[in-house]
Length: 179
Figure 1 (tube, helix red, strand yellow):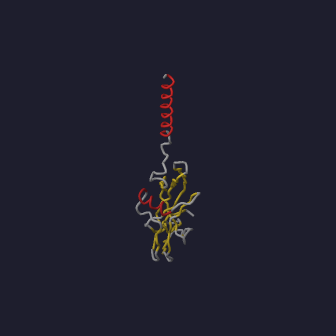
Figure 2 (cartoon, rainbow, N blue to C red):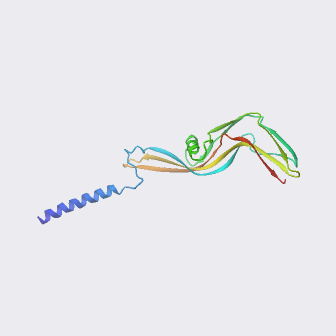
């Protein structure tokens, strides 16, 4: 009987170890049956105000010294969101996330129309500088792609990058310099 009790006890201990091992899966492990597997999520990790320059005015216009600077948009076009990362990312998904976490005015693209005029007095002895574009944002983002790894759990692949996002607010940016 002593051996019989020992065997039953050993069986319980072994069963307890198996249960403990199954319960010791990583906290972030997701089973294949979990609706979160597969999925892709984007998180905005940083943001800063950023002037998105127009496609036709990548360099700025300069006038002076002193006087008045008068400018007008003579070419229509589109300013678009861009993203850079080591692997494929969705600009649409980044914009959607940024609309919620950064600003509702963030957009995938904004159309620039002909005719937006701008006049500014230049301080005596200084040079006026101007560029046309959108007051947007430069954001950092993380993309997490979760997929089934074939061993009963999902694996997560993380990609980090930056994106330049225009807003619906467009116009002339003006500044002065000494030369």
